[in-house]
Length: 293
Image 1 (cartoon, rainbow, N blue to C red):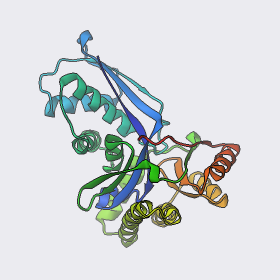
Image 2 (cartoon, helix red, strand yellow; image 1 turned 120 degrees about the vertical axis):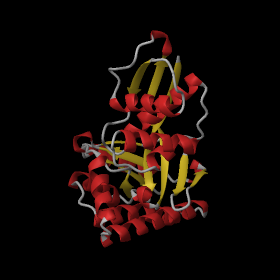
Image 3 (cartoon, rainbow, N blue to C red; image 1 turned 135 degrees about the vertical axis):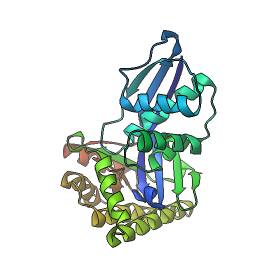
Image 4 (cartoon, one colour; image 1 turned 60 degrees about the vertical axis):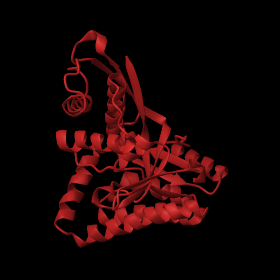
């Protein structure tokens, strides 16, 4: 039997410019994961497995291991559904990793990320970009510049105290958001084009701020990324309320993806504790994430 996992992802800055030649900065966090077991002994196809798993197995057999015998795939995931923490991509990454382990296939992180995107975008028709898959394939803290295909792991110790908050009652499918953006971008919508350029600049500036240990500048990049998104897209006011509450308490915040979760940074541990407690009192789930080293 082969077992593999992939962690949840939280974008920090630049999202969602990854699908448009932009740049993003994101972390993988240990608090939530998708885990897959593959058992070839049963010799039975996994007809009852989720569509994401079946599509991953099918593409793996077509591209990487022709003639692989059918196997039983078991999936467990603790990633909250449809809140923008990379739950679907984690399932694909975990399944692909388990298949690689079972069949002795070596996929470097960049190739694993591209394979995962192809499963979702080409096989399942899901509008998505590379960011989630790259962040989960590399783990830790990763800067991604899609203008030149540069993926740069950074030291998570550079980060200030982070928090993540989400609302399962306000979950939403990210494909709807990305599909609308794609259409507007293809039409040359000036608002979208300007926002994507600004978002990429925020990601590059966030990287520079971390390397320079300028945490105030880093915090401005998180806020700026959310503000650019807000100008470009209609947003669910329940999600916006989480951002605004965090900001009222002195934190900076951005969407983790395109669902009902936010990520933010604080000046110190005491401020983070206050922000988390206040978000929980407002009815949200919140935690201090453990970034994958």
